[in-house]
Amino acid sequence: MSAQLDILPGYRRMTAADLDAVMAIEKRIYPHPWTRGNFFDSLNAGYHCWIAESGGAIIGYSVVAIEAGEAHLLNLSIAAEWQRQGLGAELLRFIVKLARDDAAERIFLEVRPSNAAARALYQRAGFSEIGVRRAYYPARWGHEDALVLELELK
Image (cartoon, rainbow, N blue to C red; front, side, top):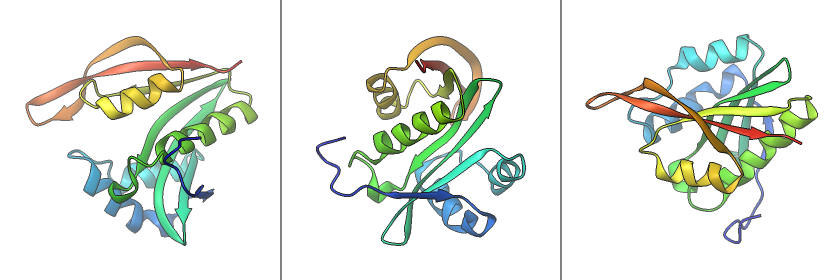
């Protein structure tokens, strides 16, 4: 656990009723946020959509698809005012446990090369870079590549 983390969040499944709060966070922390439809489709697809809460407030969320022994972390986000307190690492630990409990053998994710904080988080958690998806993310200047990362779950 991070030395900065004073309180562990509680976790619960995301519902459609959470989408206003989730979208408010998403729009505040990303220049190219997911749409409400992305979250709604993830809920309808049966993905593992989780809310991290503290004191009744939504402080973060994640979306993970788990199928055929593999997990794909699609979104892991912490509200701006809660960042840099170890909550991203805590939510990632929760996701890894969730994937293991659901018999996943590995977790994949994409991350922007420009997102140094996220890259450091995933590196500390043991993820390895296994590839690049060219022009994957929208960006101010057109598109940005995505680094593809993998964590073996043993």
